[in-house]
Image 1 (cartoon, rainbow, N blue to C red):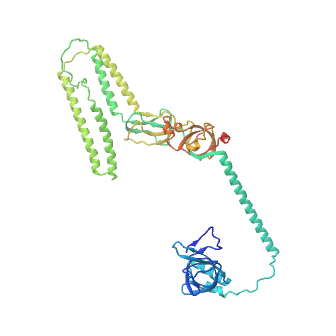
Image 2 (image 1 turned 135 degrees about the horizontal axis):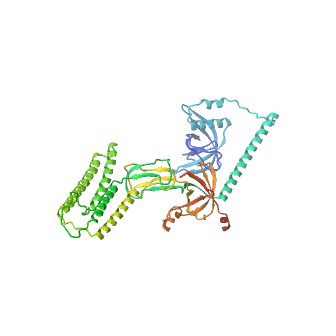
Image 3 (image 1 turned 135 degrees about the vertical axis):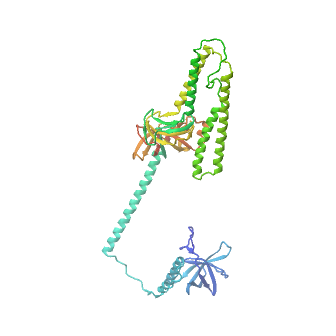
Length: 492
């Protein structure tokens, strides 16, 4: 049963839409709404003068009976409902106190859905009626007077405490808003060192684990260097042959049969190293696909497609290698051998030594060492995985002095300047510390930031540096309070 609330209404009670029948001059009317002080009737055809009184009866429908209450209605106004029906409003001019109790009990039972409980309504009529109220004033005893006095003092103290709390809350809010410009959450950083591989390759071995302490020069991981070692061995063999050839003293050209080994004078096609690198990547992709196939994450068609690609690349590489070996064998048998010019051989030796040095540097680049001391904070690498130089594979927490990065709205950033005091709270240390704003804007975290990136977002990054040297856990979230600049009030 809905209750209609009218904040601006002058009625003394809220209206309800509980079903109620009103009998007015022999005419039955349904109520649009009613309350304990009046009723609105629908379908009443006769017109009434303002303040006209009419005798009526209120018929209360119960589960298996009905109760009729005599009442005098006082006409007040006429209005229209949402459906356009005319509703005549009456106030209860004369209704006995007992009938008022019955009407109130009926209303409460109707709202609670207990109209089948008629005993409580009938009990009201069984109550004795006191016709003569007390004429003498009521005098309280001393005990009752003390209780009232204590109750008054208790309520007074409660009111005073509430007022004091309200005053402290308002005062604290005003003080907070005057002292602090903005509150946010920042991240501890600056003491992290990301590790990248200098060259692309397949991980052969990882020699550290998360949480392990490392020193400068500690070996972190190895990349596969099989091809580099083969290249160094080939260059060393060629260098030895050239060094032996420089000892020849006969200047004339002669045709001889080369030794049974292959001639190194035929250049290797550039496609062979590329195919070898491609075959290595396809082997890795096929191995990963087999793991996914065993876990039922891919079907046999996808696995077979990767295997076919690997087989085609392998066949093409074998064909090129066979052609290359045949060309070297033909050259060793049929071509004339001329004693090389010593000056030219010395240049070849120098070139080979440079290539060997480059290959050794490339070999060394496949051994990645820790550039600083610290602790392995994160490790995202495993043997057999293919990595590139652009990917950070691990992070080392160093003892470097950390700083805090956070973001503030652009409107707040417009009131900031370098050197503004800041307070921040560390959950791990359970302590509050002081700091200052050291940088404002995208350049605080990205040296390659552009003017367009500085205005592209509503949030502006700022860099905060602790006043005193601290050791804070890497990536810890800290609460940050930025002080309000003192000269900000002078601008108003």
